[in-house]
Length: 320
Length: 53
Image (cartoon, rainbow over all chains, first blue to last red; front, side, top):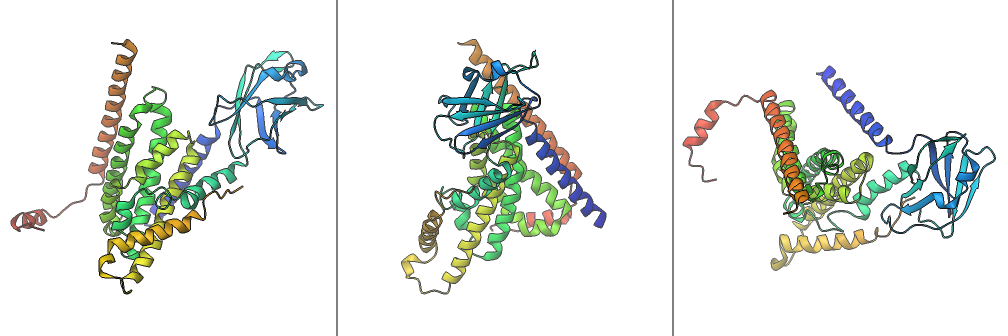
């Protein structure tokens, strides 16, 4: 028994490492070592070797825009090259919105007379911090239940008792992460290359039912105790709209593997939090003196509205 | 009829079919590997019962 648990943990760690690697190797140019924001209105680009001054200092070689709006090109006021010719500083006319990732395309990099081709690189602020903000954003700030009103049927159906709520929340999180990762993979490597984005809803719905069925089959054999506890809610997961909203969001925002994982995790944990809070209140409401017209679902809706108001306090909050 | 659209539709059919086939086989294999023996008497008893609930 113990060796199998160790094996399982190892497999999980390996899968995580693989994910990290996958997200690490983007389409970045090999000659560009590092890109970063500097002050409020500059971007610093570090090259692996010295670049030729004449080409590098030509402003028309650079096109910079925010990732969501490729049509709005940002105006560069100054290009500086450090004395060792490896560090380039682009200064812009206006302040940069550093919350958004920026894309830079550099025409024809020349190093010591050799042409290294064009580069297309991205600039992001503090990557781990950005991932954390995606997680917290999906969990609290844009909580799927309280600020997007998704998944309400399951939310009201399973929030009568704390134990049910926690069981549903955990099952949901597992299936969510599972299917979101598969959806990300299929979207990036199958649907997009063949320009079949318009089929995303059909494919994602299929993926959700697939992962639910797979978790059902595997859990039934591997861990019957867990299956007894969670099996009832597994089927309910299919009927939840959050599970289809997350793949659609990550496809629309072009998230990479790590960002998708964080979004899925945040959505799952956010749903768990929402269910648990609601169940705690509803357990107490059983004992309260509620007017007969309001008993049951109506008062639950009122409570959910109050929770949504409370979660409104998080809106507009930004981390990092 | 535009030829590119026809191509796109055919590609869609092919890709969707492949995905379906791939995952269908995957699920079938999983169901086989992780099969749980159920006592056949359970089903027999369930069949005999009224089954209103």
